[in-house]
Image (tube, rainbow, N blue to C red; front, top):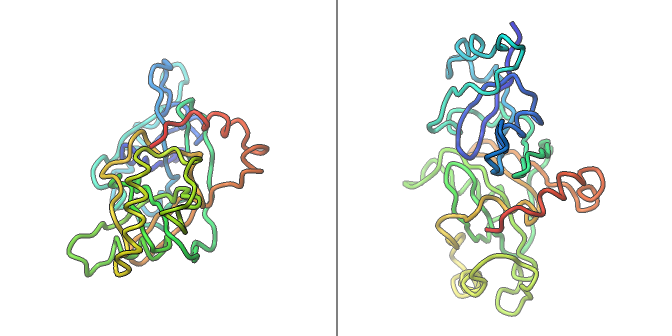
Length: 259
């Protein structure tokens, strides 16, 4: 029996078995079979060796078979609750970003995920919660702080992206912001400026809930997943690569909804 593919969807959070390869699954998941549903999607490939004993893989294998007409089984849900926390970072393979048109961009892990630079960061948390957060912490340190085992309020694991702040990253008061599509820019300036008045603060909420999904075109460095012990970085392609190698995806992503 052929092993199905296993995908960890981020919104909604779910572990899904499928006979479809990643591009076909991305198209199906974002657009649907009748092209009536158009939503961005994001999912990891998952190594099934890490899933044994945690999820009902026997059921997935039993149900992931082609129908009488030879059509592949598109999806079998294995989990829809606290799924990210149950799958170790080591199990995660490529991350796929799918546009609302169903075009998929695969991202591979980088060996080094530390970004240490001066300035402020804007993070969009993607799973299991979805606020927009401003922080003076670089991605790895931010992830460690959010998932610290000794904190009374913590997340077991987190997926998040860092978004472009432009000049506001170093000068929130006077920096130009006319190229930033975020709503409530004056509020964003106020939140960023608060770090100048309170240097003891590490992170601060900007929006309780991100609006309209992840704005792909505003991703700065990439997407991160981790906890207080493990961390992985998925770098976003350069603008040159987006305009050449990934041109079809990039053109589709230009219509992504802003936060």
